[in-house]
Image 1 (cartoon, one colour):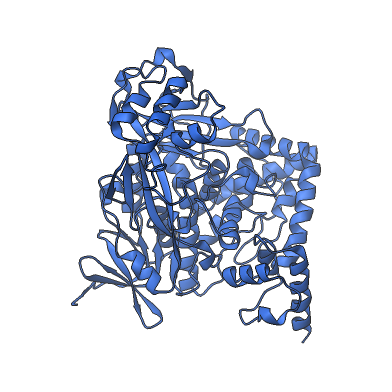
Image 2 (cartoon, rainbow, N blue to C red):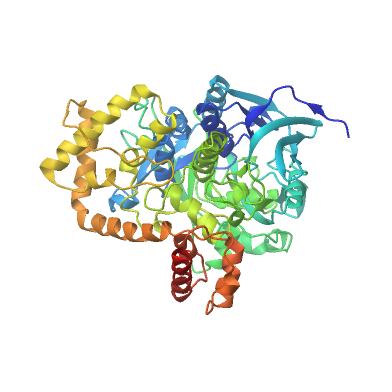
Length: 605
């Protein structure tokens, strides 16, 4: 086969223009790397293929963390917000989170323009067919047009496109997204490298014409005033925001579904892969929870200049004619018109236990993965992985230590550790309940926790640093006068390239709004100071295990007493530290103790 070798060499090539790909490309180029973002269609960059919303429980915290590290999702979400709420406002500070409904086209075009304006970043519309290697070395990627692009690193962010198959009723057809072709060559290429693939399923609800919805029969859900913001660098939008609406399915809805289960690919055997447990189809809800007589639905606008509404809670893969009957069984939707049918999609993913903590594959140095290819679901989870992969690809090229966040430092750290240590048996979604130190990882202190890293990495402009230092000073001054645990946050030690937050200065010349935010943070720290102190103590104890490395050459068979299941799990994950080994499912505390004793003996010689 004859190839055309592109004349420009790159430091980083990002495959895929979804939420992971955008953050990866912007992070790598922002750190000075010659970066190429390759996608099938430049007009679908950052497309919100499912719900046009950002944030939620756990997810809102991750978006604020992305922002504090210098990522772009939060800023674009604030720019395109059309409705927003703080969730769990009546509950504890650890589980409060912002969520915003966005204008999907405004979000998409704003992110695309951000990419187009980025220095060191080129965009190309083409499809990667395979990873280009020579021997055991990564060279770049080869495309379906027989063009080869040379690069020192490659980041795969392929979303649902690997061998994607779409299901609507008993009709199935190939696609990575509705009306977009799948990627057929990349899965065999990855398997040829020795990577193991699995298969997952996800889906999206139908869209309705808002002109045909009777909102007088629905409950209005007005936006918060003022709306919560994701970014530390944006101001409250001046435009009038829009409400969302609430309605419910009923007994007639359940009867329609039960009468048509034989036409559902989920229950007819066509779909064999596992879907997201926490975002089930309406068929699953009716079958698995028959004691519920109704299920809540949220009618969410897709933009300021469109009448399309997203029916949150009505994900399905039933035939289109059944979907219409189902929709019209719902109060307020009796005369609703379908604009886009709901569908399910199956796709390949790569088992994430084959990655290191920097999201680089263990089998091929220089090859990174981020997003749904790692078995996750959700825009926010994808964007966070993309950001971390882009940062770590740049650090690898600079021959610097990887940037790794601990479970006590960020929800991003919790997610990546879960993926690497535990693997996935279903599409992974972040929740506050996954974080054992969630009182330390609140959405209100993401800047205090992570913004120093953003400055160190060069992803946040230096002009913002003075304001950040003033904010820290305000928090410090208030902490000294009111008590609390804020200062201790800045004194936690970090690994890799981390830098700790320095002690605040005494300068308290702050803008009023900044002082209000600082007062809120200090109040929370004081209110939960006992629990926070306990979390910090537990985190420090676990850090001891984080510093006990497990060499690649360790022969597990030589360690007497470790049970067979633990040996199998160790060989599957190949943990790097004793702390990671302790978090692997199926590994007992006794086996960790035996491993610790063996490693201690090795260290003593």
